[in-house]
Image (cartoon, rainbow, N blue to C red; front, side, top):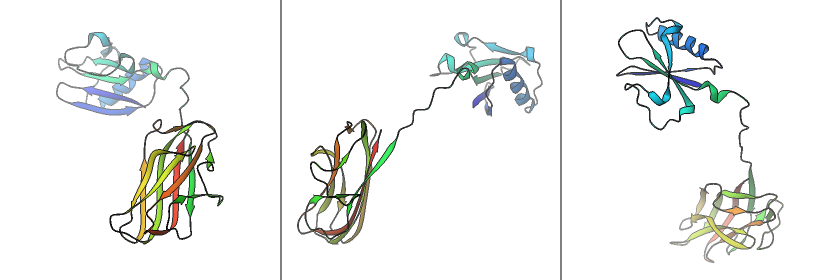
Length: 226
């Protein structure tokens, strides 16, 4: 969509119009819009302004020349300008959008746990430093969430869900408070490109807790983005 801004000395009006291939179509839309404001002009009264030689009344910063077109509307001694997105940027084939592909890796365990261990994968196989989800293509780990139930708590204690890549900690994890019983949740995200992996890398999840803590029904989801 294109935006047209009518600039008076002390007032700015904004409305949205469609994409136009020719300047005369833009002029028609300008005429129709300002007609609603009680201003009647002809095509010849709407003049395109050179961006490199802006009038003093128009002060636009941080806008590239190719992104806008400015018209001056000559109808009285009072300055009136229209700023609209350039039709040139809409000509030709639009570039294809770049879309990330996101995949969720599921880990968990339903039995009672009272010691540190690797979590099971969706197929029920327990992960390890060598066993886990093998990545099909390059990408990044962009999120991790965990839901679990503490059945035996300990004061000032925590439970960690640590992500491993090829048997080594990567530093991105969930940390859940375990100083009281009940269901606990944690979720964390980070930008693509920070924690990266290559095709063929193995991702697993490790549950770290003190022996005096007991828990059950662990569900961990790791988000990977390609």
